[in-house]
Figure (tube, rainbow, N blue to C red):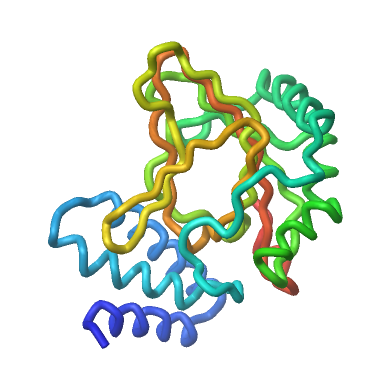
Length: 241
């Protein structure tokens, strides 16, 4: 067993000895550390990156074969052209009052998104790839409008420990060499790029897997809808804003 694996297990073991409040603080520290370490190219960052990633994977509350990467990518059958159009139109309305938040604009879900957040169709899709996860009922619209907006590598809070991310619209300026994209960052320092098409959905364990969005360019626009899920039976108060 490597030193970094041992350190990861020790960090995960510490989690069991803490109060719920202390556990939340440790998870926050691990998440912040993971976000910084996965983006670091220096060789000195590798042991810490591997140890933190190992701890987060051990603490993953979902029973999946591999918590890394995405658990699902595609356009589900329930996302008809009619429903996608309704969500795009709702996002345009919500976007008018969206507020700046961490290098993007954030808008709460409207009636269409909120119904989908707790729908049987979405629950069944998630259950088909990640058993025993249930909706928090939280749907959020995210907008990237200003050149340079994006999200640095990070781990999500518990409310989006499982994230269902739906691409609604991506306006790409003509001649752009490489549009903004979702990235998954791994313990070995590598990353995987996901260039999503409108209507495409990815499901990933955002409370375990470090991820980012590369900055948009001038005249580029991205509109996304996200749904939060939590482990089945978890105290809902831990998964609210």
